[in-house]
Length: 345
Image (tube, rainbow, N blue to C red; front, side, top):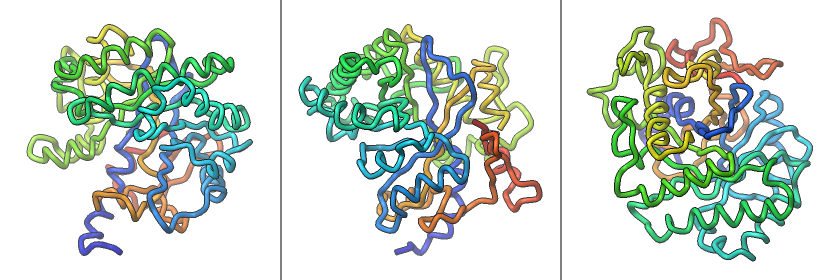
């Protein structure tokens, strides 16, 4: 049931959909092109079946999907679709996967049984596990990653399918200015070994970058044009680098934090292709959050982050070109701030 303030949430949902992004970092891993996908969440009781969802991705030239758990129906629908997939391991499974036999079974069931018909590109072992709030669960992340990786090695798939985990910005103790980005001292026991492991196996670190929430929580210090990438002027100067938008600043703060660990580990058409001020010309692989409105999500705000309504109608006047470029329709009703956030693959 829609809340009384659903119109307010709907009006803010595009900013969230376009700005809640997943960026990849790696010591040696270099995406060969700017890439955009969409996160396929299933927390709704009115969503289309997976086969129709896959068709919707294809019809809109969205060729990358993030799944938060290994849903068999979704994986079956993805066979021979051409869509690249980030396959998630739910946080609830992490401790089980500290057992080698369970990890081997998981990879056999959800990777080996579907790959290569399903183009599984990454396995995200856990999502936003917080060592501040659940140290026991955080302690299970790296062992699970190692077991999943070793299971892939045993099947000869470790070069084709990369293992990672997804972090969020709460792990950063400092994010401003971007060059001062650093992880919190009290969670270094958690993040340092993960970055080291990813660097050793040439795999990316996944980072959920929530610029929408940063703006919402700091409206007095962050301007709306800066948050929405509509500003044409530099708002932040940092060691000779100019920042015109919040996404770049948060992205580079995360780069800086990872570099401090010792690994290296939207105007979104031209913007994603251009990298960030700290890493110019480095492609950024991003996933819109999310594909659909999900009426069973909590909190209420996150129910309206979809690019599409559950009945598969696009919420925004955007088309995806035949070359897999995401473009804004000229003369559309999208605001300038929004049109500057559409990305390319």
